View 1 (cartoon, rainbow, N blue to C red):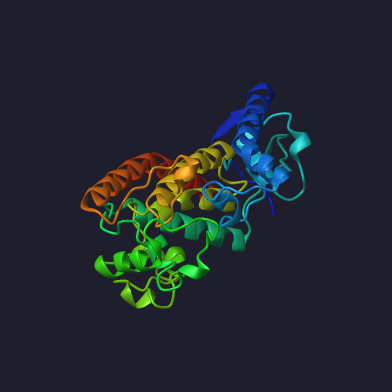
View 2: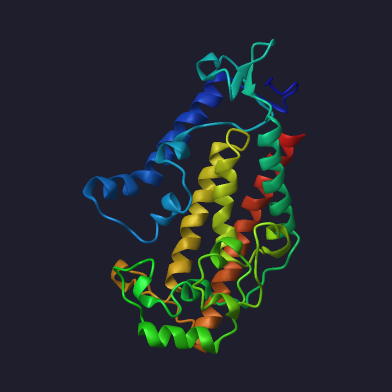
Length: 290
């Protein structure tokens, strides 16, 4: 493995050390509540999802990288012989990705480009969480929290509305009874064909793709994607069949016409927030693969 032969940007020691310190402080704020809950043995169904469904350690969000194509002056302290290397010119850069790493980056880039070309689909109404308990309310993921409409009422909503989930990772958690109700059968292989920017999980997944691209995608972008994912997760749970009002989350009652209009408004808002983050991720992945 060798360093990239050219850099698009060079950072002086005071600049990159300042960025690294600012990112570490920001990351500590972002994971502070999770750390404190873990210490007390408590859980939160909103934020904890971002650390369990996305299997990144708390420390991983704190790791700093400027991303690909950036040279760091007087940065020998970062050299690890694997991901950050010192070039013959004395500058430290992220190493070139090996073939397996490049393939993963290329997949993320292909998916993000495909999503960016599509208009948001707003007709799913967040029914994926409802489909995950359909007919099996006793085995629901958030067992400590009650269903707003009860088991029978939840099942009735799933039967009364079109189930049109486009996200593979959401669909694979549907109960066996709910899977045939979905208009699509999303597969892992067809992610780039199905995923679209109106999906709250696609917005959350920007955090995953940024983290999986370390050190070739900047730490600041990964932190931005995490904050966006937290907002999307809150919408996801407000529109779910669970009653999280004790956490201060006002339900989006998608079982009503008014609730469905509200949910579509939140989809538009999240899609707008995700667009610049996705564009930056595409640009940084392109730079890593150049």
